[in-house]
Picture (cartoon, rainbow, N blue to C red):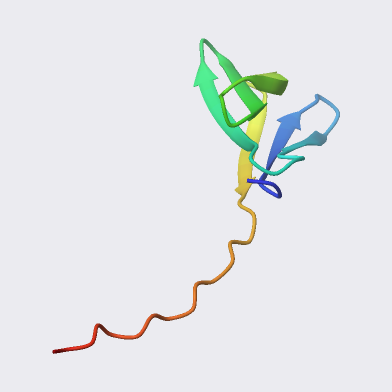
Length: 83
């Protein structure tokens, strides 16, 4: 969903660096996958096509922080009417 973003903190040797990948348009989502010693963060379309991808060595990743977009609150519904 637009507004979803993931922050990745990586050990750069001389300190930590922070990278951010976010869903830039409505209908897109951000997905995090860990495989074969790498952490992959991708922005995907509704159909699952990757728009942008960031890859990091898993041994260098300090933290992966997911920030979901604020979801609109639903109004409380009235209890069902009895006949």
